[in-house]
Image (cartoon, rainbow, N blue to C red):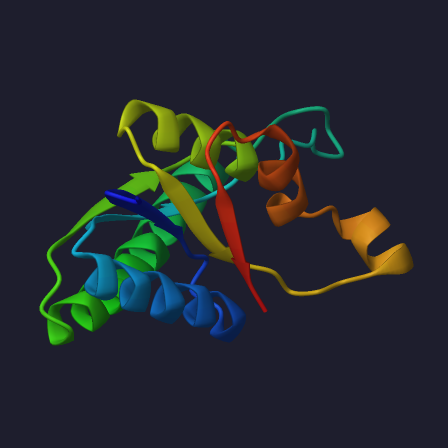
Length: 146
């Protein structure tokens, strides 16, 4: 049924529930696993003098890469404890939902597993929902864990 599971995580406690469920599903099915984390683009704002601080990007990118490496290491360790080999993917400077959907396509994933923070109403409207966007645009099934 599901031969290749894409598990999305942002490193949060809520996302870890999705990682745990995705790994359990992979173990039960003997499926291949790819774990992805995505970081957003650095918002660029002009300074008071109209200039941009070019050093801010290097600091931001380095910190994002370091955080992503830690997030993926935790997830890969969890997979290893279950006897599952997992590939990891880090995409930087990307729109999370688009990156998840595109990775599912390029890696021939048969299901995406991700968690939802469960925001409703104004919070969801203001903050958006990566999970909701993936659900609406993915061509493969999406398992949402809460």
